[in-house]
Image (cartoon, rainbow, N blue to C red; front, top):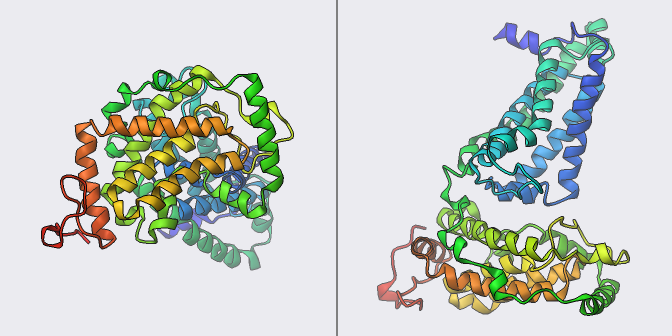
Length: 422
């Protein structure tokens, strides 16, 4: 063990001067990927949420911080081998948690815009950056940073730097390894084969939104909507913008502002599984409809519209946020009829904030409401959904200290209340 640690913290390197460019490339990518995770919710918390990883609000910033700090250390060539080992672990976990589902065709993340979109060839194409980062880190672990580095300076001045650098590296590892361990431990849980919650319900194949919705408005009506968005933008406050950005993440746990702290994934595994499958089901008909109509987002037609948060690359009609938000509101209201008005209103707010953010037209939101109602009606005919819904109802109502629902969906009398798991 002492030999391994000595090798890990040894600043000496047998790499040539050109190793600087390998260090710089890998560090540059890690640095900016970490910053992007903070800047764009869909690349940080949103991405981790879609992958089904736990506590995405904690895990995503932890990984982002690791990438920023570690990227700078790579560029400087400081404690190169320890941080290379950490990055090797991160890249292995990243490949397992995203590329295995892509191979299986069950990736919860947005599909690539052009073929190949799943299977062997898609994995080869989409893993090119992951493999480059992994192999660069492996090279630096084995050969060190080269002579143009702070580690080389440390090797030339060992008297005072050795103990300090080892202490700094141990602190870094203690900070980094918990987040890596948490992510690694849940890679299997995020994989579709282990988590049916990431699979759409069979009802997804029965939903054709183009049979339900009218086509999006034409140019004249779109112009009126753009003018309305410009007027809305003038009244948008910084607090409004912050709320819009927070709701960029499509997650049922955004409803915690209605239901409280007890409404969280770690306390509600069956409810969590239900809504992950529901969101996966929404994705199937929604993607088809958006590609069919291909409506451009407002800022692409009117440059004066400045979106609050990220401008999605998908088409605008119908709104995915409005569809998912209203559907989650409908289902939660059916699970918790005592809170139905608040839950419906919160579901509607998902869509309304997309208009306020300047990334959707009002007609996109109305189409999303219709889509949510249609998807809900079909879901309630799906036997597996009904079984999952019943299990989630028992779990959620128990966790919130509420009486069980009767078979008709009403609150059961106290004498008929089922025993809660909580």
